[in-house]
Length: 69
Image (cartoon, rainbow, N blue to C red):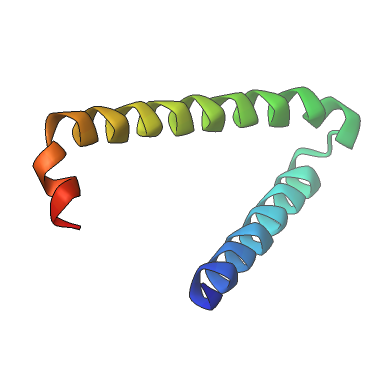
């Protein structure tokens, strides 16, 4: 689990750096970027839901592989 925690923290830091870079480059105030970030979060949530549905469908299509675990 430590590796996952480290990977998640590195990813979070990279995202924060990227957002800060865009803030600096765009010269837009942070409050205007809120709507953009909310839209990105909505996109991420849609992707997460699609991945969950695909995993559930795969699990339902291959019940014997689950029994082998």
